[in-house]
Length: 251
Ligand code: BTN
Image (cartoon, rainbow, N blue to C red; front, side, top):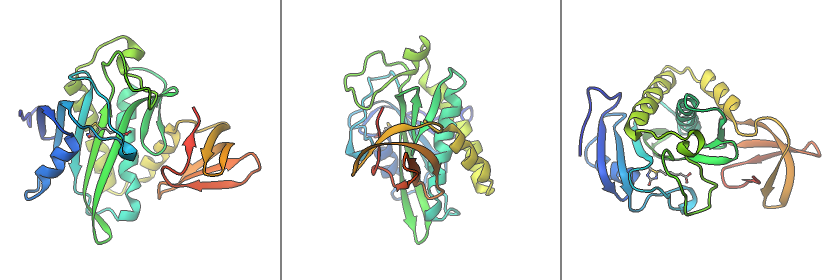
């Protein structure tokens, strides 16, 4: 385990291997409060967790796997989607410095063209109506050449640019951006976070195919509401509103 508190934007714990950086961080947060922003990264996870109970595939030492903890007790639970927005933007905007074509697929996947380069899993703990602890777990595909699981349409930064990347160097730059966005959030400067998020959306313009419980349909994105709900408008002009997992993008 190594700490680089002076040169790094946040306190850092580096691990060769763990079950999951998010589980590790959650366990470390029990009993003692780690400094806000504390970040855990690992070369390999034996049970990396994804959305919908899926596992997260990542070859040893090739990608960036990390989790960080925040204590946004100033933020009401009904505004928790701001944490997804700022985290997605920090990563998307860092990736923009390496290549073109990145976007945020609602609610918080990072895509390059039609492929997923990054997954984010945010787990919040509430105290009354506010958020006492938020652990964001992030996997960014940096240097992996071949993916064994076809879902969810993965791509790595190396496959896009042909270059290889130092995961901890990329992590430092991402966490610097997270710090900047978080300080905006603390100062209630949320309008620009929300506007940038809408602007960064995958398929923000145009009609595309989606699938919900009623079947497939063509629609355009109207907006993502502050609650995090996605509003689509179908060909008949009807607005359809979804929470995460209720609608699927047909790629
Ligand atoms: C998704 O399914 O899109 C979310 C994937 C999140 C994976 C990351 S890897 C680091 C952190 N630790 C985990 O176990 N999961 C997250």
